[in-house]
Image (cartoon, rainbow, N blue to C red; front, top):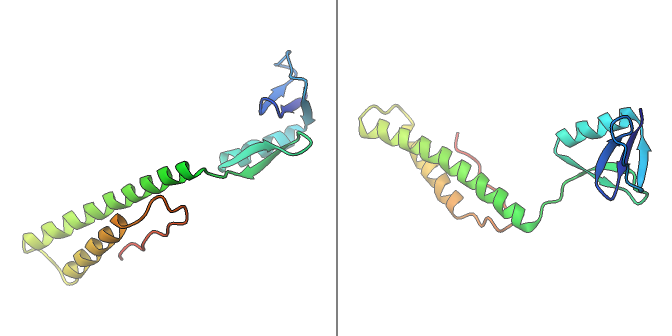
Length: 132
């Protein structure tokens, strides 16, 4: 059994399974194949080097992808802030607050405002630190 990689198809082939192999394949060891798959499971992508040999590299996101990632992260953080604000507001409204609850509420509200002001189109956006 031999393992091959094709730059053209960005795919792996096992000659004991695949009979119609692309014309640009390069042979790799089973160990290297397993290493590449492990790296792929860690969010790296497999690309070809200049010789058509597979290598694992960090994924580079497009601007549109970064906007989607930033938007999703901001929404997740806003949901968390809204939940904390809601609970703290209930505690205060029901006269069940403990020392520091009003300060916590204020901190979470400030955090929510800062999140809403984030420009998600900025690929280098820095999200504010969560309140303690």
